[in-house]
Image (cartoon, rainbow, N blue to C red; front, side, top):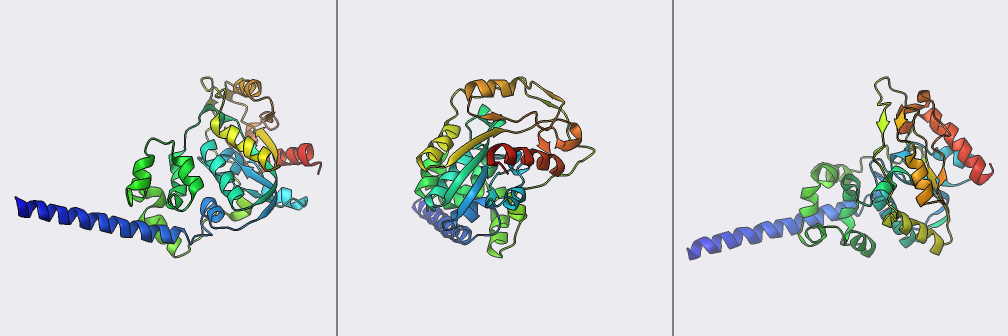
Length: 293
C-alpha cells in the first residue's frame, strides 16, 4: 500500500510539473504574438494614438468602415470582436489605457449586448494567456465563477478553452501565421448571401437597467477625457420587437439610436449584420453627424 501511494504521488507530481512547464511554454508564445488577433495585438503593443477607436461585437466589427474614417483624416481602428460582449469591450479599453494609448473618440456599439453583463466565453478566453501577466485582466476576471481554477490551476485554462487557445492556436501563433482579424483596419466587410438569416425576434430582449461593463466604458472615457459616442446600429426590416431600441433609449438616453438609418434587406447579410454596401451608407451618416466630414 505504501509503495502504491508513493507511486501515485510521483505520478501526480509529474503531471503537475508537466502542466506547469506547458503553461509557461504556451504563455511565453502568446506573449510574443502581435499579428494574429486584436487582443494580443493590444496586449503586446506600446502607446498608440487614435482619433477614433471602435468597440463592440460583430455589429461593430461589420458596421463601421475604418478606411472611411481614415479617408477623412481620422486615424481609426475597429476593435469590434465578433461574438464579443461588453465584458470584453471594457477589458480591451482598459488594456489600451494601461498601455498609454491616446484616444480622442471611442465609438461603442451598444444595443443588443446591453441585455446581459456576462462574458462571451469564446472571446474572453483569448485574454486568458495573459492572466498572470496583467493585474487588469486578473481583476476583470476575478468576479467570474471559475476564476480560481483559471488562475491557480496550471494549464487548466488552455485545456478548458482548447478550441480558442489550445495546441492549434498556440502552434499557429508560434509560427506567426496571420489571420484576417487585422485586415481593413479591423473592419470586416460582409457580402449578401441568398441563405442569410433575414428574420430575428427580439421581443423578449430587455436592456439591463444598469449594465456594469457599459458603465465602466463610459467612466473610463470620462476619466481619460475621451469623447464617448454610444450608438445603436441598424437591423433589417423583418425584425420583430424593434421597440427594444426604445427601451434602450429610455434606460440610456445618451445612446444614439441609428437602428433605422439602413433598413432594406438588400443591405443586410443577415438580419443583424449589414453588407459592406450597407455599412458604407451607415458610416457615411456617422461621419456626417459626429465628425462633420
